[in-house]
Image 1 (cartoon, rainbow, N blue to C red):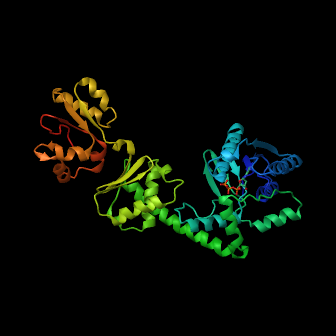
Image 2: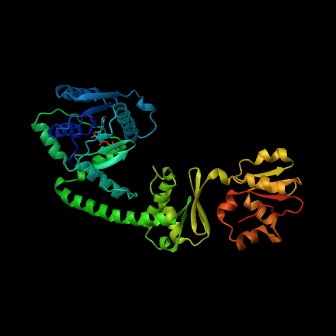
Length: 395
Ligand SMILES: Nc1ncnc2c1ncn2[C@@H]1O[C@H](COP(=O)(O)OP(=O)(O)OP(=O)(O)O)[C@@H](O)[C@H]1O
């Protein structure tokens, strides 16, 4: 990868072989406008030694260095160390970048890292947006470059040893590292060419699928919901899962899927493919994803909380503010002449058999008119206890 010499770069340097090699690589490429950033987590007993390696290198080579000393009681850390550490690191890089008006970050991932990631992706069988590690990606304002992705670990170590460049050895073995180490031991660098071909092929295939997903989503997203047409139902599960994920991304609900395995996506995709029911629903955290005839929708779980309120006077209008259609209900009551008392409810199971729409049982009316699930579960109806006839228009 050719880096632009005129750009300014933040360089993440842990003191490990990859990032020390990265510094040498940049020297050779004559990339000079840099700020080296090191995070000392004080997680391992050698942490201060790692910092010293980076400090010494920067002093000898006249490089600007910023160090973040992390003060954390690790017994009290309740998230996974690696992902927590990554977040701390990126926040620090972002802070230094903003302070100095830098927009680019360089990291020391190598070919072995990418191949290990690929093997982990295959084992986990999650939906991925790219196989292996990306050469260029984006993190908030930062363009992130990984210029060593074509270089094998053995070449890095050989170069550092031959040139007597000091580097830190990381022997931590937490959960994430443990999995990686296991894979690392099973890998042979002689097989890398074949694996790289497989990664490239899979990324090309993925690209084609993502183009199809993109055009499906573009023509089938309707406000917040997704049209479930025949094409989707007869597609492969993988394609359906990707469409759902892309839909959630576009309506900014993809956070519901992050940190989860793709079990949820798989469950939704299977239902889309196999169930001919007009309605079904799946709860994810505080949201409900549900099929509504030929649409997939999402609502906040709170909207489904069943409430029934008796309205005895205008004073009581404040008791129904939480219904999404409360304005409509107030309007209906006023137009009816304020003939209290009224009942306002979104408890479909309660009112469907007790009330009427015109002369029909509400239950029958909903089925005949194919009233969608969203209106049934999220919106409230209002009726008078005199005749139990629903007063608002249900569409
Ligand atoms: N303590 C640190 N201080 C500064 N930079 C670091 C530190 N640890 C890692 N880095 C940077 O991140 C790169 C990747 O490190 P490592 O493989 O340990 O992290 P990862 O969690 O797998 O990667 P990523 O941070 O991209 O998710 C290193 O080559 C280095 O550039």
